[in-house]
Length: 461
Image 1 (cartoon, helix red, strand yellow):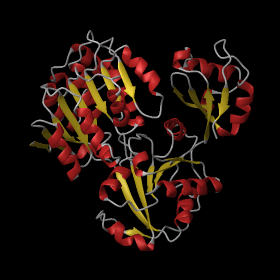
Image 2 (cartoon, rainbow, N blue to C red; image 1 turned 60 degrees about the vertical axis):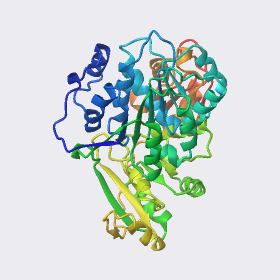
Image 3 (cartoon, rainbow, N blue to C red; image 1 turned 30 degrees about the horizontal axis):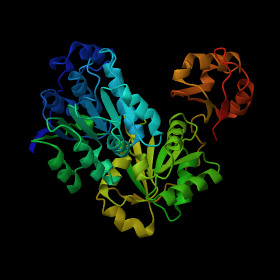
Image 4 (cartoon, rainbow, N blue to C red; image 1 turned 45 degrees about the horizontal axis):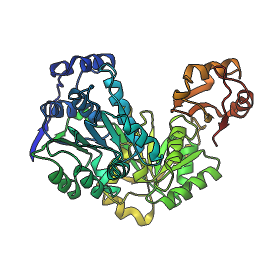
Protein backbone atom coordinates (compact mmCIF):
# COMPACT_ATOMS: atom_id res chain seq x y z
CA UNK A 1 0.00 0.00 0.00
CA UNK A 2 1.66 3.19 -1.20
CA UNK A 3 1.51 6.27 1.03
CA UNK A 4 0.90 9.82 -0.13
CA UNK A 5 0.84 12.86 2.12
CA UNK A 6 0.57 16.59 1.57
CA UNK A 7 1.21 19.85 3.36
CA UNK A 8 -0.02 21.75 0.30
CA UNK A 9 -1.56 25.18 0.88
CA UNK A 10 -2.45 26.06 -2.73
CA UNK A 11 -5.29 23.90 -3.96
CA UNK A 12 -5.93 23.10 -7.62
CA UNK A 13 -9.01 24.00 -9.61
CA UNK A 14 -11.56 21.37 -10.72
CA UNK A 15 -11.14 22.74 -14.26
CA UNK A 16 -7.66 21.14 -14.34
CA UNK A 17 -9.22 17.67 -14.15
CA UNK A 18 -10.23 15.76 -17.28
CA UNK A 19 -13.89 15.54 -16.24
CA UNK A 20 -16.68 15.11 -18.78
CA UNK A 21 -18.42 18.38 -19.66
CA UNK A 22 -21.71 17.60 -17.79
CA UNK A 23 -19.70 17.24 -14.57
CA UNK A 24 -17.79 20.45 -15.21
CA UNK A 25 -21.14 22.18 -15.79
CA UNK A 26 -22.55 20.72 -12.57
CA UNK A 27 -19.52 21.93 -10.57
CA UNK A 28 -19.97 25.46 -11.95
CA UNK A 29 -23.69 25.39 -11.15
CA UNK A 30 -22.94 24.20 -7.60
CA UNK A 31 -20.19 26.86 -7.35
CA UNK A 32 -17.42 24.35 -6.65
CA UNK A 33 -14.20 25.76 -8.10
CA UNK A 34 -11.30 24.90 -5.79
CA UNK A 35 -10.59 21.38 -4.60
CA UNK A 36 -10.24 20.50 -0.93
CA UNK A 37 -7.00 18.73 0.07
CA UNK A 38 -8.58 15.27 0.01
CA UNK A 39 -10.11 15.94 -3.43
CA UNK A 40 -6.81 17.18 -4.86
CA UNK A 41 -5.01 14.08 -3.64
CA UNK A 42 -7.62 11.45 -4.46
CA UNK A 43 -9.32 12.55 -7.68
CA UNK A 44 -6.35 12.04 -10.06
CA UNK A 45 -5.96 8.47 -8.74
CA UNK A 46 -9.71 7.80 -8.78
CA UNK A 47 -10.15 9.13 -12.33
CA UNK A 48 -7.22 6.99 -13.42
CA UNK A 49 -8.99 3.87 -12.12
CA UNK A 50 -6.75 3.22 -9.12
CA UNK A 51 -7.80 1.98 -5.68
CA UNK A 52 -7.75 4.61 -2.94
CA UNK A 53 -7.57 4.30 0.85
CA UNK A 54 -8.19 7.75 2.27
CA UNK A 55 -8.12 9.13 5.78
CA UNK A 56 -10.96 11.62 5.61
CA UNK A 57 -13.73 12.69 7.92
CA UNK A 58 -17.20 14.05 7.19
CA UNK A 59 -16.87 17.62 5.93
CA UNK A 60 -13.56 17.05 4.10
CA UNK A 61 -15.14 16.86 0.65
CA UNK A 62 -14.70 13.10 0.27
CA UNK A 63 -18.28 12.53 -0.95
CA UNK A 64 -17.82 14.85 -3.92
CA UNK A 65 -14.50 13.14 -4.71
CA UNK A 66 -15.95 9.65 -5.12
CA UNK A 67 -19.18 11.01 -6.65
CA UNK A 68 -17.20 12.60 -9.49
CA UNK A 69 -15.15 9.44 -9.97
CA UNK A 70 -18.27 7.28 -10.20
CA UNK A 71 -20.19 9.59 -12.54
CA UNK A 72 -17.20 10.02 -14.85
CA UNK A 73 -17.42 6.33 -15.76
CA UNK A 74 -21.18 5.72 -15.71
CA UNK A 75 -22.82 4.57 -18.95
CA UNK A 76 -26.36 6.02 -18.78
CA UNK A 77 -27.58 3.75 -21.58
CA UNK A 78 -26.67 0.55 -19.69
CA UNK A 79 -29.23 -0.12 -16.96
CA UNK A 80 -27.17 -2.16 -14.52
CA UNK A 81 -25.62 -1.41 -11.12
CA UNK A 82 -22.29 0.14 -12.13
CA UNK A 83 -21.37 1.59 -8.72
CA UNK A 84 -21.98 0.60 -5.09
CA UNK A 85 -21.53 2.90 -2.08
CA UNK A 86 -21.83 1.35 1.39
CA UNK A 87 -22.59 3.66 4.32
CA UNK A 88 -23.01 2.89 8.03
CA UNK A 89 -26.37 4.61 8.48
CA UNK A 90 -29.40 5.53 6.45
CA UNK A 91 -28.86 9.19 7.31
CA UNK A 92 -25.40 9.20 5.75
CA UNK A 93 -26.64 7.19 2.74
CA UNK A 94 -29.30 9.85 2.09
CA UNK A 95 -26.67 12.62 2.30
CA UNK A 96 -24.40 10.78 -0.14
CA UNK A 97 -27.30 10.16 -2.53
CA UNK A 98 -28.19 13.86 -2.46
CA UNK A 99 -24.63 14.89 -3.45
CA UNK A 100 -24.49 12.34 -6.29
CA UNK A 101 -27.91 13.36 -7.64
CA UNK A 102 -26.95 17.03 -7.66
CA UNK A 103 -23.78 16.24 -9.64
CA UNK A 104 -25.58 13.85 -12.02
CA UNK A 105 -28.42 16.18 -13.01
CA UNK A 106 -26.54 17.55 -16.04
CA UNK A 107 -25.74 14.04 -17.30
CA UNK A 108 -29.41 13.02 -17.34
CA UNK A 109 -31.06 9.61 -17.09
CA UNK A 110 -28.92 8.46 -14.16
CA UNK A 111 -30.96 6.31 -11.77
CA UNK A 112 -29.81 6.02 -8.16
CA UNK A 113 -31.40 3.80 -5.52
CA UNK A 114 -30.89 3.93 -1.76
CA UNK A 115 -31.14 0.47 -0.17
CA UNK A 116 -31.23 0.76 3.61
CA UNK A 117 -32.79 -1.18 6.46
CA UNK A 118 -35.78 0.01 8.42
CA UNK A 119 -38.11 0.09 5.41
CA UNK A 120 -39.90 -2.84 3.70
CA UNK A 121 -37.86 -4.74 1.11
CA UNK A 122 -40.84 -5.14 -1.21
CA UNK A 123 -40.58 -1.63 -2.61
CA UNK A 124 -36.80 -1.92 -2.99
CA UNK A 125 -37.10 -5.22 -4.84
CA UNK A 126 -39.68 -3.67 -7.18
CA UNK A 127 -37.41 -0.68 -7.89
CA UNK A 128 -34.48 -2.99 -8.63
CA UNK A 129 -36.47 -4.81 -11.35
CA UNK A 130 -36.40 -1.55 -13.36
CA UNK A 131 -32.61 -1.30 -13.10
CA UNK A 132 -30.36 1.32 -11.50
CA UNK A 133 -26.95 2.75 -12.29
CA UNK A 134 -25.84 3.58 -8.73
CA UNK A 135 -26.65 1.82 -5.45
CA UNK A 136 -26.18 3.60 -2.13
CA UNK A 137 -27.01 1.49 0.90
CA UNK A 138 -26.23 0.03 4.29
CA UNK A 139 -24.38 -3.32 4.42
CA UNK A 140 -27.14 -5.36 6.08
CA UNK A 141 -29.86 -4.51 3.56
CA UNK A 142 -27.57 -4.69 0.52
CA UNK A 143 -26.43 -8.18 1.56
CA UNK A 144 -30.01 -9.40 2.08
CA UNK A 145 -30.99 -8.22 -1.41
CA UNK A 146 -27.93 -9.93 -2.88
CA UNK A 147 -28.72 -13.19 -1.09
CA UNK A 148 -32.26 -13.34 -2.51
CA UNK A 149 -30.97 -12.47 -6.02
CA UNK A 150 -32.85 -9.18 -6.09
CA UNK A 151 -29.63 -7.22 -6.60
CA UNK A 152 -27.01 -7.97 -9.27
CA UNK A 153 -23.54 -6.45 -8.84
CA UNK A 154 -21.81 -8.41 -11.60
CA UNK A 155 -21.41 -5.23 -13.71
CA UNK A 156 -20.22 -3.02 -10.84
CA UNK A 157 -17.17 -0.97 -11.80
CA UNK A 158 -16.64 0.97 -8.55
CA UNK A 159 -17.24 0.05 -4.90
CA UNK A 160 -16.98 2.64 -2.12
CA UNK A 161 -16.82 2.14 1.64
CA UNK A 162 -17.77 5.44 3.29
CA UNK A 163 -16.87 5.85 7.00
CA UNK A 164 -15.42 2.35 7.06
CA UNK A 165 -14.36 2.54 10.71
CA UNK A 166 -17.93 3.21 11.79
CA UNK A 167 -19.21 0.21 9.81
CA UNK A 168 -16.61 -1.97 11.50
CA UNK A 169 -17.65 -0.57 14.92
CA UNK A 170 -21.23 -1.53 14.12
CA UNK A 171 -20.26 -5.13 13.37
CA UNK A 172 -20.59 -4.99 9.57
CA UNK A 173 -17.12 -6.32 8.72
CA UNK A 174 -18.31 -9.82 7.75
CA UNK A 175 -21.21 -8.41 5.73
CA UNK A 176 -18.83 -6.12 3.84
CA UNK A 177 -16.44 -8.95 3.01
CA UNK A 178 -19.36 -11.09 1.82
CA UNK A 179 -20.72 -8.25 -0.34
CA UNK A 180 -17.31 -7.79 -1.96
CA UNK A 181 -17.47 -11.48 -2.91
CA UNK A 182 -20.39 -10.59 -5.22
CA UNK A 183 -18.33 -7.91 -7.01
CA UNK A 184 -16.16 -8.45 -10.12
CA UNK A 185 -12.47 -8.83 -9.37
CA UNK A 186 -11.76 -6.01 -11.84
CA UNK A 187 -13.72 -3.40 -9.82
CA UNK A 188 -12.17 -0.25 -8.40
CA UNK A 189 -12.26 -0.03 -4.58
CA UNK A 190 -12.38 3.30 -2.72
CA UNK A 191 -12.24 3.24 1.08
CA UNK A 192 -12.73 6.30 3.28
CA UNK A 193 -12.23 6.23 7.05
CA UNK A 194 -11.64 8.88 9.69
CA UNK A 195 -9.40 6.55 11.72
CA UNK A 196 -7.25 3.52 10.95
CA UNK A 197 -7.31 0.92 13.72
CA UNK A 198 -5.92 -2.57 12.97
CA UNK A 199 -9.36 -3.81 11.90
CA UNK A 200 -9.46 -1.23 9.08
CA UNK A 201 -5.90 -1.97 7.99
CA UNK A 202 -6.77 -5.66 7.71
CA UNK A 203 -9.93 -4.83 5.76
CA UNK A 204 -8.06 -2.67 3.25
CA UNK A 205 -5.59 -5.47 2.56
CA UNK A 206 -8.45 -7.84 1.76
CA UNK A 207 -10.54 -5.49 -0.36
CA UNK A 208 -8.06 -3.34 -2.32
CA UNK A 209 -5.28 -3.98 -4.82
CA UNK A 210 -2.19 -1.80 -4.51
CA UNK A 211 -4.34 0.93 -2.99
CA UNK A 212 -2.81 4.36 -2.56
CA UNK A 213 -3.11 5.62 1.03
CA UNK A 214 -3.77 9.33 1.11
CA UNK A 215 -4.04 11.71 4.03
CA UNK A 216 -4.37 15.46 4.07
CA UNK A 217 -2.72 17.51 6.77
CA UNK A 218 -3.68 20.90 5.38
CA UNK A 219 -4.49 23.33 8.17
CA UNK A 220 -7.56 24.40 6.20
CA UNK A 221 -9.12 21.01 6.84
CA UNK A 222 -9.04 21.35 10.63
CA UNK A 223 -12.33 22.34 12.24
CA UNK A 224 -12.43 25.28 14.65
CA UNK A 225 -13.43 23.59 17.90
CA UNK A 226 -12.93 24.97 21.39
CA UNK A 227 -12.49 21.96 23.70
CA UNK A 228 -13.32 22.40 27.39
CA UNK A 229 -13.82 20.04 30.33
CA UNK A 230 -15.74 20.71 33.52
CA UNK A 231 -15.65 18.90 36.85
CA UNK A 232 -19.19 17.59 37.34
CA UNK A 233 -20.12 16.00 40.66
CA UNK A 234 -23.78 16.29 39.58
CA UNK A 235 -23.82 16.08 35.77
CA UNK A 236 -27.54 16.82 35.43
CA UNK A 237 -27.12 20.02 37.43
CA UNK A 238 -24.08 21.11 35.38
CA UNK A 239 -25.85 20.34 32.09
CA UNK A 240 -28.92 22.24 33.24
CA UNK A 241 -26.72 25.24 34.14
CA UNK A 242 -25.04 25.23 30.72
CA UNK A 243 -28.45 25.26 29.03
CA UNK A 244 -30.06 27.76 31.41
CA UNK A 245 -27.32 30.36 31.04
CA UNK A 246 -27.22 30.07 27.25
CA UNK A 247 -23.72 28.53 27.03
CA UNK A 248 -25.26 25.91 24.73
CA UNK A 249 -28.41 26.57 22.72
CA UNK A 250 -28.43 23.53 20.47
CA UNK A 251 -26.22 20.49 20.91
CA UNK A 252 -25.73 16.77 20.51
CA UNK A 253 -25.29 15.26 23.98
CA UNK A 254 -23.38 11.97 23.83
CA UNK A 255 -23.83 9.07 26.23
CA UNK A 256 -21.88 5.80 26.22
CA UNK A 257 -24.92 3.48 26.34
CA UNK A 258 -28.49 3.31 25.04
CA UNK A 259 -29.84 3.03 28.60
CA UNK A 260 -27.99 6.17 29.70
CA UNK A 261 -29.20 8.07 26.62
CA UNK A 262 -32.84 7.10 27.25
CA UNK A 263 -32.64 8.04 30.94
CA UNK A 264 -31.02 11.42 30.24
CA UNK A 265 -33.61 12.16 27.54
CA UNK A 266 -36.44 11.53 30.01
CA UNK A 267 -34.75 13.61 32.72
CA UNK A 268 -34.28 16.62 30.42
CA UNK A 269 -37.85 16.54 29.17
CA UNK A 270 -39.16 16.21 32.72
CA UNK A 271 -37.20 19.38 33.52
CA UNK A 272 -38.92 21.19 30.64
CA UNK A 273 -35.92 21.04 28.27
CA UNK A 274 -37.01 19.96 24.79
CA UNK A 275 -34.74 17.05 23.91
CA UNK A 276 -35.00 14.04 21.65
CA UNK A 277 -33.08 10.76 21.74
CA UNK A 278 -31.33 8.71 19.07
CA UNK A 279 -29.97 5.20 19.60
CA UNK A 280 -29.56 1.89 17.80
CA UNK A 281 -32.69 0.23 19.22
CA UNK A 282 -34.99 2.72 17.52
CA UNK A 283 -36.86 1.84 14.33
CA UNK A 284 -35.53 3.60 11.23
CA UNK A 285 -38.73 5.65 10.81
CA UNK A 286 -38.40 6.95 14.39
CA UNK A 287 -34.70 7.71 13.83
CA UNK A 288 -35.58 9.76 10.74
CA UNK A 289 -38.25 11.74 12.59
CA UNK A 290 -35.85 12.40 15.47
CA UNK A 291 -33.20 13.83 13.15
CA UNK A 292 -35.76 15.92 11.25
CA UNK A 293 -37.04 17.45 14.51
CA UNK A 294 -33.48 18.15 15.66
CA UNK A 295 -32.51 19.77 12.36
CA UNK A 296 -35.59 21.99 12.22
CA UNK A 297 -35.33 23.26 15.80
CA UNK A 298 -38.29 21.38 17.29
CA UNK A 299 -35.89 19.77 19.74
CA UNK A 300 -32.70 21.81 20.23
CA UNK A 301 -30.95 18.98 22.11
CA UNK A 302 -30.29 15.49 20.74
CA UNK A 303 -29.20 12.80 23.22
CA UNK A 304 -27.32 10.14 21.25
CA UNK A 305 -25.02 7.16 21.45
CA UNK A 306 -21.80 7.02 19.40
CA UNK A 307 -23.20 4.81 16.65
CA UNK A 308 -26.42 6.81 16.29
CA UNK A 309 -24.61 10.14 16.28
CA UNK A 310 -22.34 9.24 13.36
CA UNK A 311 -23.27 10.63 9.97
CA UNK A 312 -25.26 13.56 11.37
CA UNK A 313 -24.06 16.68 9.57
CA UNK A 314 -25.55 19.96 10.85
CA UNK A 315 -23.55 23.04 9.92
CA UNK A 316 -25.11 25.34 12.55
CA UNK A 317 -24.61 23.00 15.53
CA UNK A 318 -22.99 25.17 18.18
CA UNK A 319 -21.85 22.48 20.61
CA UNK A 320 -21.24 18.84 21.40
CA UNK A 321 -21.47 17.69 25.01
CA UNK A 322 -19.76 14.52 26.21
CA UNK A 323 -22.14 13.72 29.05
CA UNK A 324 -20.19 10.48 29.46
CA UNK A 325 -16.42 10.51 28.94
CA UNK A 326 -15.81 8.42 25.79
CA UNK A 327 -13.85 5.24 26.30
CA UNK A 328 -11.54 5.64 23.30
CA UNK A 329 -9.84 8.60 21.64
CA UNK A 330 -11.37 7.65 18.27
CA UNK A 331 -14.85 8.08 19.70
CA UNK A 332 -13.94 11.42 21.26
CA UNK A 333 -12.66 12.69 17.90
CA UNK A 334 -15.78 11.52 16.07
CA UNK A 335 -18.06 13.13 18.63
CA UNK A 336 -16.46 16.55 18.64
CA UNK A 337 -16.31 16.49 14.83
CA UNK A 338 -20.09 17.04 14.75
CA UNK A 339 -19.50 20.73 15.61
CA UNK A 340 -17.21 23.38 14.12
CA UNK A 341 -18.40 22.75 10.55
CA UNK A 342 -18.85 24.78 7.39
CA UNK A 343 -16.30 27.36 8.54
CA UNK A 344 -18.15 28.08 11.78
CA UNK A 345 -16.68 27.85 15.28
CA UNK A 346 -17.82 25.04 17.55
CA UNK A 347 -17.53 24.01 21.17
CA UNK A 348 -16.92 20.55 22.64
CA UNK A 349 -17.71 20.22 26.35
CA UNK A 350 -16.83 17.14 28.39
CA UNK A 351 -18.38 16.57 31.82
CA UNK A 352 -15.94 14.71 34.06
CA UNK A 353 -16.98 13.16 37.36
CA UNK A 354 -14.44 12.53 40.12
CA UNK A 355 -14.02 8.83 39.21
CA UNK A 356 -13.57 9.63 35.48
CA UNK A 357 -10.51 11.87 35.84
CA UNK A 358 -8.09 9.13 34.77
CA UNK A 359 -10.27 8.10 31.83
CA UNK A 360 -10.37 11.67 30.56
CA UNK A 361 -6.64 12.23 31.02
CA UNK A 362 -6.01 8.97 29.09
CA UNK A 363 -7.49 10.69 26.01
CA UNK A 364 -4.39 12.98 26.07
CA UNK A 365 -6.20 16.08 24.78
CA UNK A 366 -4.11 18.53 26.84
CA UNK A 367 -7.26 20.15 28.25
CA UNK A 368 -7.35 21.51 31.79
CA UNK A 369 -10.32 20.21 33.75
CA UNK A 370 -11.95 23.24 35.39
CA UNK A 371 -14.81 24.17 37.66
CA UNK A 372 -17.98 25.43 36.01
CA UNK A 373 -17.87 29.26 36.05
CA UNK A 374 -20.31 30.86 38.50
CA UNK A 375 -22.43 33.94 38.05
CA UNK A 376 -23.62 33.12 34.52
CA UNK A 377 -27.30 33.56 35.25
CA UNK A 378 -27.99 35.39 32.01
CA UNK A 379 -31.30 35.26 30.17
CA UNK A 380 -31.77 32.14 28.08
CA UNK A 381 -30.81 33.16 24.53
CA UNK A 382 -31.95 29.98 22.80
CA UNK A 383 -33.54 30.47 19.37
CA UNK A 384 -37.29 30.38 18.80
CA UNK A 385 -38.50 26.89 19.61
CA UNK A 386 -40.30 25.13 16.80
CA UNK A 387 -42.75 22.25 16.56
CA UNK A 388 -43.13 19.86 13.65
CA UNK A 389 -46.33 19.64 11.65
CA UNK A 390 -46.70 16.40 9.65
CA UNK A 391 -48.64 16.25 6.39
CA UNK A 392 -49.65 12.90 4.88
CA UNK A 393 -48.44 13.85 1.39
CA UNK A 394 -45.11 14.41 -0.30
CA UNK A 395 -43.15 14.67 -3.54
CA UNK A 396 -44.90 11.75 -5.26
CA UNK A 397 -48.29 13.25 -4.35
CA UNK A 398 -47.27 16.35 -6.36
CA UNK A 399 -47.30 18.40 -3.15
CA UNK A 400 -44.72 21.18 -3.36
CA UNK A 401 -43.17 23.16 -0.52
CA UNK A 402 -44.57 26.33 -2.07
CA UNK A 403 -48.10 24.92 -1.92
CA UNK A 404 -47.68 24.24 1.82
CA UNK A 405 -46.25 27.68 2.57
CA UNK A 406 -49.12 29.26 0.64
CA UNK A 407 -51.73 27.29 2.60
CA UNK A 408 -50.11 28.16 5.96
CA UNK A 409 -50.06 31.86 5.08
CA UNK A 410 -53.49 32.18 3.45
CA UNK A 411 -55.48 29.54 5.35
CA UNK A 412 -53.83 29.64 8.80
CA UNK A 413 -52.72 33.28 8.83
CA UNK A 414 -48.98 32.62 9.41
CA UNK A 415 -46.18 34.88 8.24
CA UNK A 416 -43.10 33.55 6.45
CA UNK A 417 -41.04 34.20 9.58
CA UNK A 418 -43.23 31.78 11.55
CA UNK A 419 -42.52 28.92 9.10
CA UNK A 420 -39.22 27.07 9.40
CA UNK A 421 -37.55 24.19 7.59
CA UNK A 422 -39.65 21.97 5.31
CA UNK A 423 -38.51 18.36 4.77
CA UNK A 424 -40.29 16.43 2.03
CA UNK A 425 -40.25 12.68 1.42
CA UNK A 426 -42.18 10.65 -1.15
CA UNK A 427 -45.45 10.57 0.81
CA UNK A 428 -44.72 12.65 3.94
CA UNK A 429 -43.88 16.28 4.61
CA UNK A 430 -42.50 17.75 7.86
CA UNK A 431 -42.95 21.48 8.45
CA UNK A 432 -41.36 23.39 11.36
CA UNK A 433 -43.56 26.19 12.74
CA UNK A 434 -43.22 28.30 15.87
CA UNK A 435 -44.19 26.16 18.86
CA UNK A 436 -46.28 28.91 20.47
CA UNK A 437 -48.71 28.94 17.54
CA UNK A 438 -48.45 25.26 16.52
CA UNK A 439 -51.68 23.94 18.17
CA UNK A 440 -53.83 26.75 16.74
CA UNK A 441 -52.20 26.39 13.31
CA UNK A 442 -52.89 22.65 13.34
CA UNK A 443 -56.54 23.31 14.23
CA UNK A 444 -56.93 25.85 11.41
CA UNK A 445 -55.19 23.85 8.69
CA UNK A 446 -56.24 20.24 9.34
CA UNK A 447 -59.59 20.48 7.49
CA UNK A 448 -58.44 22.93 4.81
CA UNK A 449 -57.44 21.66 1.36
CA UNK A 450 -53.89 22.15 0.08
CA UNK A 451 -53.70 22.39 -3.69
CA UNK A 452 -57.34 21.26 -3.88
CA UNK A 453 -56.83 18.13 -1.79
CA UNK A 454 -57.39 17.42 1.91
CA UNK A 455 -54.46 15.72 3.66
CA UNK A 456 -54.23 14.14 7.10
CA UNK A 457 -52.23 16.53 9.31
CA UNK A 458 -50.86 16.06 12.84
CA UNK A 459 -48.31 17.51 15.25
CA UNK A 460 -45.21 15.73 16.53
CA UNK A 461 -44.52 16.11 20.25
